Length: 67
Image (cartoon, rainbow, N blue to C red; front, side, top):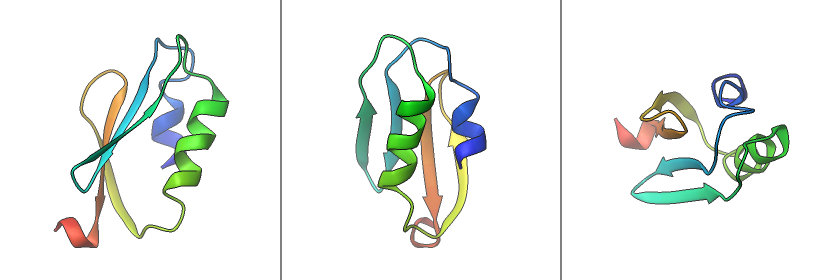
């Protein structure tokens, strides 16, 4: 998960992640490693099957429950 999210470090914010119909934001002007770490911490206990990048700075997390 961290690797794909790191692809947006240095880009314009906010960093947006969607999961189970909820949207999580890391509000910022520029996405940093700190913002990626904050998002990863929120989802560390999930059994993640995949992550889809939906725009240049937003992602959708897929878990077993989603399939």
